Image (tube, rainbow, N blue to C red; front, side, top):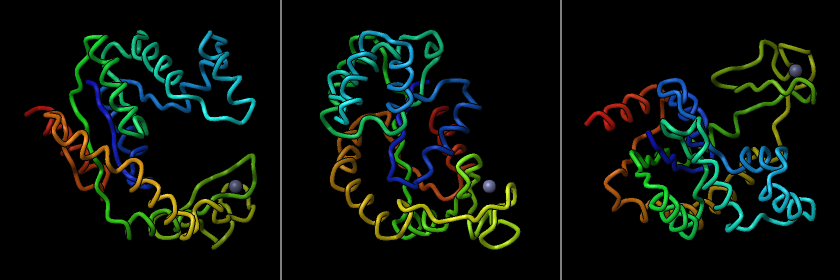
Length: 215
Ligand SMILES: [Zn+2]
């Protein structure tokens, strides 16, 4: 089962990925995790990536593509994988398509998680995180409030709204997404594996995905 998850920040890609991992026993591949483990393992590509990261520079696409190509061939990805947060641009999507062709791998599903912008803003601005760096428990003022307002249930430290989860910052992240990543939807729309599902309740998304895969 080879799956690409598309969707704005806050569309619930992480939650949906977790449910798919559980259901199909396939790994989730994110570029961040992949970079960290290649650097840790000290592979050639990992060493090159570390050089860029240590200089505070972005790791170039060509290097990322090399890492992806290797990662997709690891034993745990034999039954498939979930790409989450990658590709981010049309160029990356083109290069990924070339790698998949080279490896003789087709895509079973490219799913766009559709969530109205006001719902995303509400979801992300309602998060509160424990300010204790050793705890970092996450709450939600609507769906998972702490027992005492502003106080962590686990360690008693104050809970705070993260700087990158304020409305202004989230609007900026959403507009970057609209500009850079939303065009991917147009790119994949022509692919027979593409579908778009409303992502308001994670369980319903999974049902829609499974239905689609069994079609
Ligand atoms: Zn805490």
